[in-house]
Amino acid sequence: MSWLLIHFELLTKYIFLFGYFYLAGRSFLLILNKLIIKKLKIPSKILFTKSQILYPLLGIIFVGNLLIIFNYLFPLKSNVVNFGLIMVLIGNFLNMDFQSNKYNVNLYSFSYLFIIPSILIMSSYDTSWHVDAGYYHLNHQNWLLESNMILGQVNIFWAFGMSSIYEYISAVLWFDRSFILIHFLTIIFIHTFYMILIEYLREKKDKELYFASIFILAFSLLDNFGVEGGRNGFIYIQGVTKQDIPVAIIFVLVSLWSFLIIKNKKSTNFDLMILFLLSFFIVQVKLSSVVIVYLLLIVLTVMYKPIFKGKLSQLKIFIPTAIFFFFWLLKGYLTTGCFLFPLSSTCINNFEWYIANSTESFESVTTTASYSLIDYLYQSKSISDWWDNFYSYKINRTVLLNFVFSFLIIYLFKKVFFKVNKFPLYLKISLFSFILVNLTYLILYGPTPRYAVGTLLVVIGTLGFNVSKMRVNINANLFIVLYFISIFFLVRASSYQAFLDTPETVLFDPVELAKYEPSIGDWVKPDVGDACWINLKCTMENENIYIDEGTFFKTAFKDL
View (cartoon, rainbow, N blue to C red):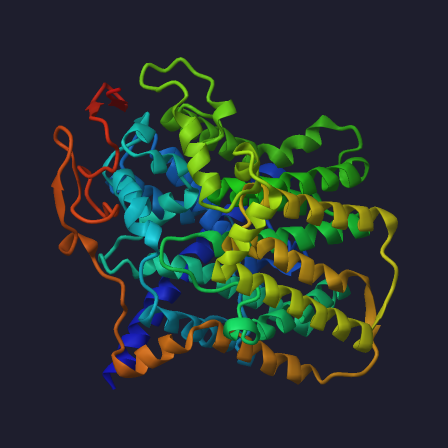
């Protein structure tokens, strides 16, 4: 029975982490409601969704942004930060009435809190580090733990400039050096996504979201069939430290909620405030998701008169996002010399540590690695050359073909079994232009399948926005069965096999295995490959780096 005890221990850790972010999110909402909206009670629904389902996501946003602010002055392992992480929960005391927010004890609540995560954490037995974990993610987290903000940190290693808020959150999860909580951080996003789907499938209150959920559920099932055995662009469980799937999940949710606001031409101040916080978080996690701003501008255009009515006082709903944006943007500027790294045109500074024109090469590296069309055009190559290279990679070809097949199957399914209405013109323009902007951006700057998951899910989900009703009655219990089948197959078969064979997590502490050799000055580099893993003296840079301790901030310089 040791395998059962091990799984129970993992589930306990997961529930603890989930519970912490749940309470942090509730605390955050109570604080926002009190200070911005001037009310104490959290709305029962936020963005068409039961509020408590969104608590963990909002807790992650709250904690992540506070960690960025803390790190200006303190290493993230400091007792001051630990105390701050406890004080994050203090907002819960603004309203001690948990009755209105608790889950009723029934089969569905049991599924939400225990069965779904029990299945998802099965991935722990077969999911190890992503290839980029050793390259830069873990060592960047190590720097965040050991030091406050370092001016010019990009000089230590250029990839640290790709800093994501995800690194700050992950860094404080190094509790027992099993690193399993970093994996569980991603599972929280997947868990929440499935909870939202089941809510929409059960309640059917907003028919657009109900039918969108049906099509997304169908898409998830089709992900298991097709060319090379499947993979059509649905979410999947990545190697640990990678954050593409959390981005995709929030991206599709924000997009669907935004389209519904545009269609109804109705929203609340509170909903808009949360919508902007979630959207900004997408950009904080992955800068390439900045295209979400296009959709937010449409929402603001539609909602300007109903919400703001020319009153500047209504702009207070943007204060939380503005505060987080200021500290995030300033942090990026002080550590990279660029407002948006690695976009070289935003590197306007006179910092003595900044090496002029250095960012251009990093910009090229990121686009080249992502099959960027614009990179081919810069090299005076043809579109056919780009296509041949893109299509030659098995994963690109597999996802593209399977997505096309899945889309056609779902579209035919929609035509046969559902009655549809015409899209209102303004919604049609908004929807198609947003998808076009996304696809254009992906092709120009990085049509890698893992970057495209959010956009592909938006395409599938929006198929439900002009459905009026089903032509035939389908038993609701069938959707519930298919829903759990979807969750079960999201976890790889090899994970279940690993659980049965040797129920141990495959994550390892790389400190014990990594080997190094002398580099330039006092620095070292990996003896093989490019993975520094966890070693503050390791860098892949080819120039000598020295760090000035300074008075308040360290500064990293690099010799030319």
